[in-house]
Amino acid sequence: MRLLVSSVYKNKLKLWMLLLAEASVSLLEKLHTSLTLKYPKLAPKANLLRVRCRDDRLRFLNSAWLEADGIFPLKNNTYRHRDNLSAIVTMEYHRLEKGMVLPNRRVGAGQDAIIRLLLAIELQYKFIGATAEGAIGLRTISIYLSETPTEALSTDLLDKLALFKWLHNEYLINNMTSSAGGYKTLAKKELVSSLDFDFEAFALSRHSIRDYADKQIDIQLLKEIVTIAMSTPSVCNRQAWRVYIVTDRVTIESALLFQNGNRGFTDRVPALFIVCADLHRFVSVEERNQAWIDGGLFSMTLMLAIHGKNLGSCPLNWSASRENDQGLRRLFNIPQNEVVIMMLSLGYLQDSVKFTDSPRRSINEVISVVS
Image: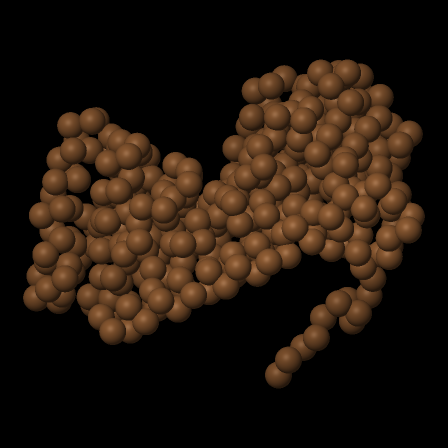
């Protein structure tokens, strides 16, 4: 208990120091930002970088549930958005799932995660009602309890079993149950049964395509591509991805005006994905860069899914200016809690396809073998 309380105050102090530092430079930065944006040519590059980073820092501070870091559920009424609670429930049930599949699973391990999960589901049910992730969490707890002897349960967890039963009944009443959650066991033969193809050839045959057939892509096919990409791993399974699907040619051209890597084929793009990440799904200062990590993984899987559907795509980076970022947000009503990861143009392939013959660096320039 003493360690838990210490953790509480440590994280409170960390948060207050972060907020104090933010407040102390706020007025100065506003003046600095105004002058820099008004006279950009007079501003050193380092100052421009500072201005560009400020939006991202404030966006993260205002969206992520930093108060949940290490102290949930003692201070559990500070969430700003329903997705803050969804993220916590998902994170805790996934922690429990990971413990269940460890090679040397220790009987009774992970009970602290169950307590946090129950309290998170209770809070979520109080403010939002029964949810899909709550149902998955309750099923995961059921599996854990069925595989753990009662004598291995702690007093703290035994005290929470009444809460578990109440939540379980409430979810049944609301007809909100799940067949997902926990873990699965497959024979190796089953797991590799879908790998009977040359993945190396598949991966090496993907190229960035900048010329597409003049043919519209059915929205259902675009949804199938995104569904495949949603198999991408993410931090604690929190799946922060958001995808804006654009198929109107005029709107696509308007969007591409904010991106500087599409010159020469802007009017040839039949479909556009705008990949974002929702900062509501993150819960600690240490996760400040996680949106780009998870978003990058998702975008690569998205490109492979496009390639697997016999379409071509081209990743369009979002190394954008502050003005272009805000312009894109206004065009698509992208909220401030989301960060733009990248754009992806895609379309059907022409009968003859041209792509750059760009060689890759040597493997020896990339790897460091540590023995």
